[in-house]
Length: 156
Ligand SMILES: [Zn+2]
Image: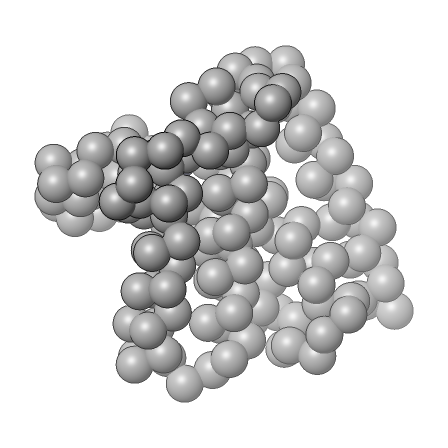
């Protein structure tokens, strides 16, 4: 999926969760948007890869694309690292939720993800789509609608 869809995925999932849990909504949703693009640090051409080219190159050289940074192991490690540096549960949970939304969206693409890394088993939904194709535009639209629907409930 493209960076735009991942940002929207992070926003939509945190906005929806804000409706059910009492996180600080602004922090939580911004963290969700950022978390939505963090896993693609493994890809130099991604939004976050272009921001941090050196880290991106190192991660890509060691792990390759869509392996470690798209895994449950990465989530667990990120949770540990973030908890050391950030003293705000809304931000930490928002970042993690954004990353999970990223995994779900990438699992809907043909390439799938290595969710169980270091096991080399590819996780992919039975119906997969092409990154940047028309189906992705529809998904982006659906995520926007979810954001508007739950966002309206969060604001009210
Ligand atoms: Zn990705």
